[in-house]
Length: 107
Length: 114
Image (tube, rainbow over all chains, first blue to last red; front, side, top):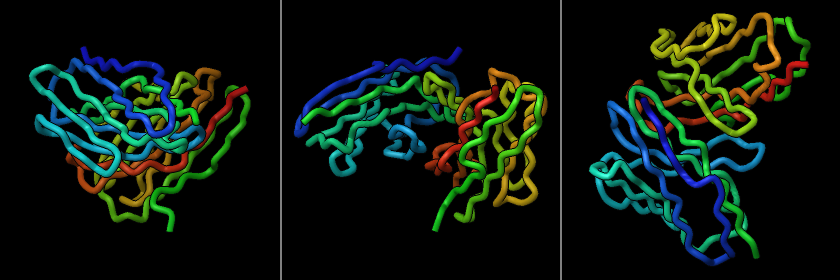
């Protein structure tokens, strides 16, 4: 079967650094994506990792280890607007989403 | 300006009714998708079309029928609505069939079945 695990909730304060982990079990793996979704909003693409290593995009970075079936999203210099749900998704012949991690950033 | 648009944004209806949700993308993408997000925010793919051809059809009841009149449009028709169909339905598109491409999501349609 296919499964993804990520923490259900994470809290942090403004300016802090947060890491959201994602472990997966799947077949036909092409890569790992991350999406952000604010309450009442649509998922928006953050990053995609096809190869092992770290991809950096501004304050957000994403990491993948294919041998460990593990990835994470790193959010730095947290801002209030980063409060949202974050989904990892494995790219197979379709996108399979994790259950999401709700990040709450406090002042 | 809108990349992926859906109508309506909200849909409230009675059990047993038939309803449609429309989706349009102006990004010139070849591939479009329908997703269902339940009350626990679990997001699951339902269908995918590439250039008007159905390429993914998950285990969705056949009361759900997608229709793609052209590659910029993917509509979803639902027959005999049930309480369990209440959810947010998202349309999305991507540049190519290759799944590595970023998917662009519409604003969602919140369907409430009473």
